[in-house]
Length: 290
Image 1 (cartoon, rainbow, N blue to C red):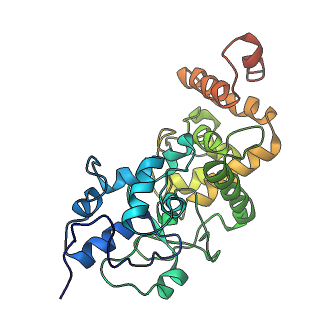
Image 2 (spheres, one colour):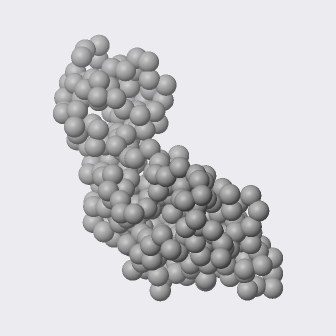
Image 3 (cartoon, rainbow, N blue to C red):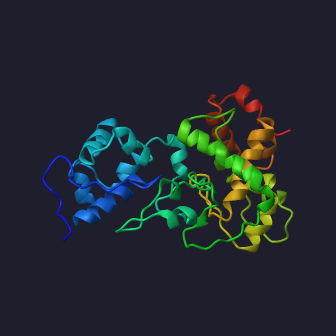
């Protein structure tokens, strides 16, 4: 018989979390075990919480301690299962639902109840599993070959750059997350060497193959506000981040020359913010069109 949720400070039975399991997934599995709604399980220790996603994204030290007490573990373990350590600017790259999974780790999982969700399944900059380094497969469980295989080494470097910034707060001269946003800005369509029209992005300047693939497949790339690409297209964006980061600030001048109208002003504003400068003649002189 499935046990009911006890009225006590600590759960009598605690299910061990999987490696890299998302906090809400762990709570959901407990809710299934105790035959209660997942939110009711969470509110057993956090009565004011609004949703399971909220506890994944925004988890205070006090909340982590209360969850840890109920599940008889350490607060540090609870925080590691959440996404609350992700740098705020990198939260744009966190998906609302799992986008990808690791087939190797999924085969090793042995848990009853709902299928576990790992943190890495929501990270929109990952190409490989952070646990076993296997290449991720998209959410519909199809292993689609990427047309950007020639850029794989650069793409892995881009993944590393964003991972270092998002998870550890480490960055070089520029924010790789912000570079990803810049590369998804619209550019002057006259800079594209294609007969067919389309909404071209700066990404195609750095990774030229991207233009043809986007047009051929009639893809509408996301905006800079939501820079998460499908897994099969993601290597292009990550490679672009790596290339721009490696080339240095001078490449931003070249990229800005491919933009017209208000987008050029927006580009300058994003760069000024990224480089922690204030808009003005001196900071913007680096980005002026020659």
